[in-house]
Image (cartoon, rainbow, N blue to C red; front, side):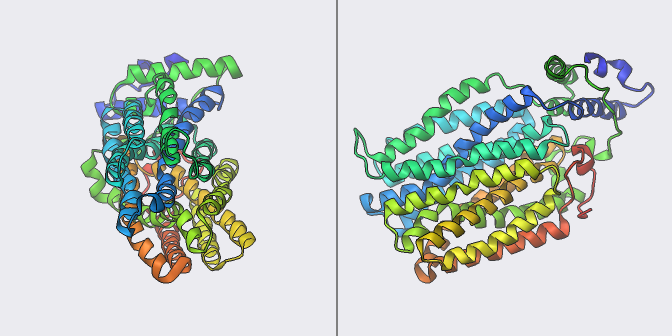
Length: 475
């Protein structure tokens, strides 16, 4: 199969731009016709474990505040700073490392972001006060924040068009296991004083597993689509040929790739192009969506233990119930892994957001334990369906050359809005209680639904190259 990118694959007489597009089309066709096998599953596992650590950091803030508020006598402002510090770091990391991923490669950024997270995540465990802790979590957040940006771009560029939803769904399932893990670890660790304070063990647990993951990631290949987009065709050929060889050993001879013409969007798309013409509209649509979704979903998840405290549960009950409710996160992602390539992702986002808004209102009103647990579980399951479908969807609608930056910008603005949210949410929680906080969340989810319904393109089962060549029209 390695001859698919030789000179005979490129029609003679074409100009340089045409021959470049032909080579990129061949790479895309070879990747899209591959059967999903052991190679893709290994990649899914490695990427999913990395996402686990981002979400571990993301949800840890609420648990730390619930644990440290009585120990350190934290004020409302200090509590807000501690929660928002990691989100501010994620804002910087998502945009900065996402952009660098477009410039220098997805694989290199995967190693850099994990190293940043590892070092400063462990330093946070030794923090003597809330300000040092917040500073360490800010820098750790820079590393963690790039993870979800790189996941959709990197994995989506390797997966065949009919499998992106399923396998990114499994990646998210692994990542979302962090939500119940933090809560279940937090409940016993909140009470322990073995050698060091329990919350420090929680931070050590967050950073220590990244050591092994960093070693494993050294073997990741660079994205073949990215290499082809940078004109590094020999390297792209080597990556694809290696995957084909393993696929042939597992599944037998491969079908010939069907090379379809690419649209004009496959030409180089520098960052400045994202702020004009057709991609500006697409960028606005996605950034409105990401900001509203970030506050409504991740922001509420970050303060879930505090919402339960406001309902009258004690710290251990709140963390335990948060853990039980958070089981819905990996479950919802597994639902998307099952149906994400059969149901249009645009529709999946809209329906799950509206149902999540309704469940959130009921959760805010509920005060009986069984109702709180049941409705909270439904809320997190729907939230996971929503977030997982979005993680697949957003990178699909931007070109390879700027996929990292465009996705990172959306994720970064989402994290920035989420970073500012605790200050408003904690005030709303104090003044209006859980119902007030969750009513704001419901309104933002309705805005997300309208935004995608009116302006989001269809992506399920389509080539990345076809999606990025389409104007923002909802077709």
